[in-house]
Length: 308
Image 1 (cartoon, rainbow, N blue to C red):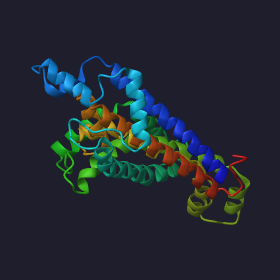
Image 2 (cartoon, helix red, strand yellow; image 1 turned 60 degrees about the vertical axis):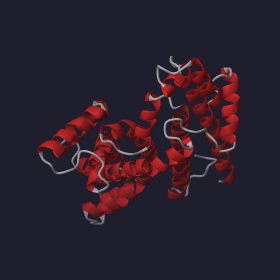
Image 3 (spheres, rainbow, N blue to C red; image 1 turned 30 degrees about the vertical axis):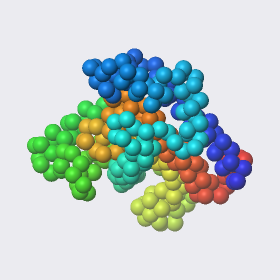
């Protein structure tokens, strides 16, 4: 296991470096002068030159890249010209809000999707199964920003059940969390349903039924435990997707997380914050994948890092 974790950490370094390099290139090849954006259109040539020198924008691109990597290795991603502080510090300050939103979405996906999938497995081809199958496809196709706006109009404006924006309360996280989770609830239900049908045809399930074990115990104890491994694997990946997909949801619901911070930074050409946000999301995704692998081996003792 130690060799496996070390190998994954080595891959993580490569992935993080690739993400940093890609973002560094993209934000700097976009047309426009960040110095003019910082000072405004009426700034003098001397003022623009001073800002470019302060932020290292007067150096060739390769020199900026080398200096940037050197700073990253020392834990310094630069300062935000817009917020006036450390870009990494500002990003990490927003990360708990994004993590909270993602966790709420994950819980909603599990609480709704897993039982729904088990019910569909008990009655395959029936009305509920067809509705979940259709809803899963529609949920994956609908844009998340449009879905968020529709839910705000329905539950916040028309019904008045939930706040439309983040207000610091538990109710304030339910609407954006549900918006983030909704496209994946049907997807998880389909995964659970297919896994339950496959397990239901095996000998141990037929034996349990022949012994008179209640159907509920057969489905939720015997079958549920055996489909836990692929489900847990998918849930870890879903958590990473939630963190990444939260960017648009945070903007729609004015949620104070990394996503809304990154959108503002992109709009204002705040290079350091964009790179810090992307690096934070990348590392979060890598850590989640590593945890999923460890849990995967823990749930199924027949597997080892060598034969998986």
